[in-house]
Image (cartoon, rainbow, N blue to C red; front, side, top):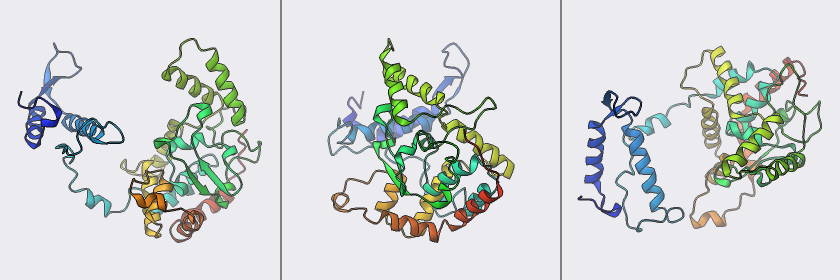
Length: 330
């Protein structure tokens, strides 16, 4: 009753709401008739409220609240010590990454070598097509003809590294279609389809679909790419856990830590922030300087970082590739 409108909420509201959550009792499975216990997800609820208010105050997104509104939930509780973690080594260090690559098999080596040296998100691997490689650059883009958008609708591109190109599965099939496919089953590999053929088949399946919705369209697309042997996040994660367990890694080391290592090494190599943001697929920001800054030395900055900080990983990939038998991808 004291805070009738969103614009009325302040620090007092935030404190009272937090105390309310701390004293709140909920049932284990959401059944009102069941036994109750103290609520354990207070931080989750506070994060949701904080994110909603952040979205509503953003002029480029919700734009629902006045410009002078101060979000009392903007400081997440328990994050004050975050700087200490940032001063430590990433959970996957350069030495750990080299050790990881040194035990990869012929299927795993190109997958995790590409993750480590390009800092990609695992799910992005399954959306790289040979058609996006022109001999000097590899591009990570959206594919509107397949109703796929990259995170933030941003694209990235990287100079092709010889050590990766030598292990990418191209020797036994034409350079078209998906660059990475899931591990072949004993029954044989999936049929290789060019990107244009996948787009045509997707449009055909969509035209005969009786119920049209974003969910049904995504299901059709995912089924089609699964039939084509697409490498999914789950496939990559299963391979990662298998090797991490073999090496006795702590559970705190996750696939995302390859991106932490990538960003950290770029920083240590002196790569400017505008280039790091582009290579990581992050927002370039809204400051006017962004529009004036051209990334005309992307190749030079990236290759310099490879030489200064990533050389042990490149050497490990080359050495491991020489130790492994030729992998027939189908």
